[in-house]
Image (cartoon, rainbow, N blue to C red; front, side, top):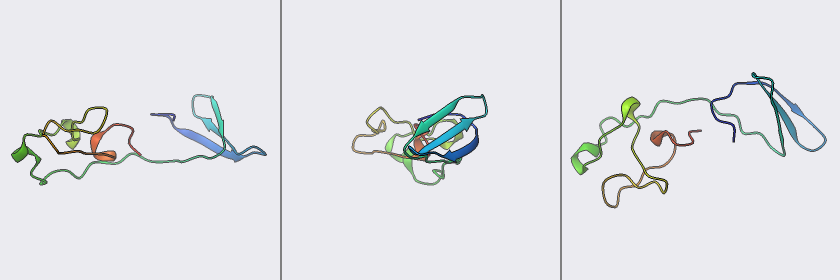
Length: 85
């Protein structure tokens, strides 16, 4: 996982792929999953009514196992800002 990096190129190799990062690093692996940033669409969900205050940018606060501050309410994916795809 290479966070906050800009890929310059992806090349197929005999072993898989090689991704050249803009800072000059080359990351090799069997596969490459490329993603772009996203903006969470969390306004209007009513989370404030159950005690979940959104973070700046509209992100839902979670702990390391995806629990929000409200009991029984979980969030995962790009809306949390943790390991966004």
